[in-house]
Length: 280
Image (cartoon, rainbow, N blue to C red; front, side):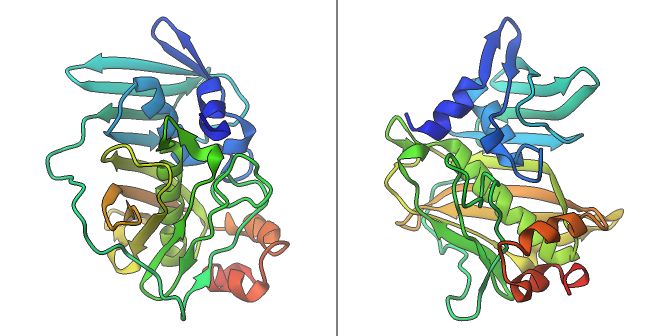
């Protein structure tokens, strides 16, 4: 078992009706906040499922390094999950078998142009992209006029039982959706409704391609702050191993603080491509 999966499993303390969940600081996304994909992975691990559809609707920010209650309610193959603190629900979700419409068929991965793409900004501590996060993915996604995506190869830290730790897939999908939302809105924000299908265990030694098309991103008619995205993951043989529908909510002005940190790591011209209003 790699160190990343061990850290996630070590943060789950079983109790009679669920778990106490304490997410390691390495699972941070935005500052002091758990990356959305890591919470889904905790639901998946706690439920004991293999290939599964995992959903999480985020009501409030999920803190890292803080004991939280996870209640599991099994019913006819579906496990309802509620993560909460003393003030109430933080994330409400479920783990279910994947639907018949999902398959591991081979199709063409969504790829960004090698010649005309640009890297999205990175950070030091983010679980998905942070260059100083020893348990993290250190992924470098890119964007062009048509898509957001990239190819990522796991290290020994991301292995569990000869397979890729699911937290890697849930996080990569969430990260791609975040940047699709940013590019559509010009604002920072957060992913709020994550619906991810892990089609089957993925061999550890495969490279993973993540991608989503910018043309598939749509604003909700009833509230244009919310943007629906579609992203997927493929192994290095072109087999689809996971897909997701993820909603991003734009928060006006939230990028100001984020951009300050990004400019310490990323050239201004690259930050300006994703946050033009907030980058001089």
